[in-house]
Length: 111
Image (tube, rainbow, N blue to C red):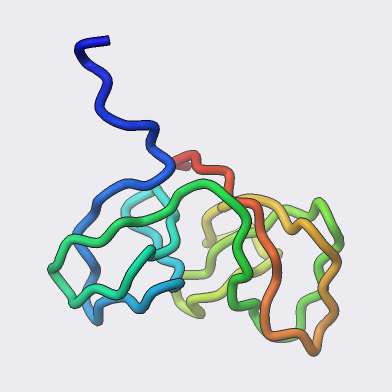
């Protein structure tokens, strides 16, 4: 195909204010991704948009396997609260309240 560019599992974006560390989750417009490497604010960064990642979890929340996972930009963490947050995928295993992370399969879709 002459017009094919890439699979889209990783996409190059400009790192937001504050920059990103490798493994940080971020929402760029309507697309969520995980930084493949560290990048200073304004620098190009590859964001992985598909796959399974351990991401920071908002405090006080339990996840069951298959629960919808939403990104809270304010908390920079995964939550189960839909209102005001962005659907990024589903939890792939149960996670109890004391855990700091939740394993999430990213849906790779802009919402």
